[in-house]
Length: 159
Ligand code: HEM
Image 1 (cartoon, rainbow, N blue to C red):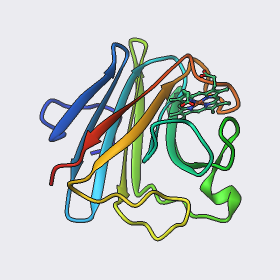
Image 2 (cartoon, rainbow, N blue to C red; image 1 turned 120 degrees about the vertical axis):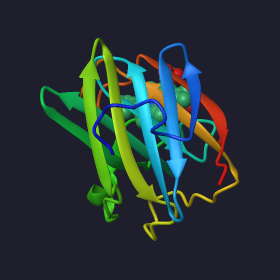
Image 3 (cartoon, rainbow, N blue to C red; image 1 turned 90 degrees about the vertical axis):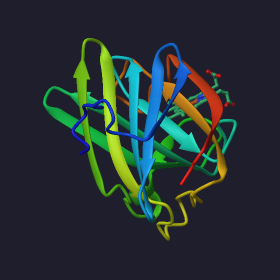
């Protein structure tokens, strides 16, 4: 359940992205559920299918503001800021369910998406493939403020 708490055993797989960020994920027939937990006071996010921040990348990021959590379906038209909501550039919001919480300086977001959304601003995920991802975290809730930490790695989506 995307409630902002990553329970033990809730996800099939996990990977440490750095000392301050973890990614957890599971897949069902045609969807992926992702949990991101980062030691950050602001947003945490990932970009799919790329080793670098560049134009044309599908991003997800979210933050928690008091009781409210938001997770955005984003896309970069430029190699740097801004990254924009898919819905702001003619795409669709393809986050099926989401949640988030901030506890003890760690921001956790959880969300679910179809592997293939049909939106031109979304990366098409194929189970079994290695996926290059970039990740970032920020102490600000604003996506106009760049990250405090960022990096890249590869995950393999087992079925
Ligand atoms: C989920 C969101 C984001 C991710 C995963 C991400 C990831 C990255 C990564 C991995 C780099 C390293 C260099 C490179 O790949 O070329 C980078 C660089 C950069 N990003 Fe982002 N980024 C995100 C959001 C943003 C936002 C919102 C901004 C601006 C408001 C921004 C501004 C920059 C800038 C200026 C650089 C170059 C300077 C540096 O290396 O720190 N990024 N980003």
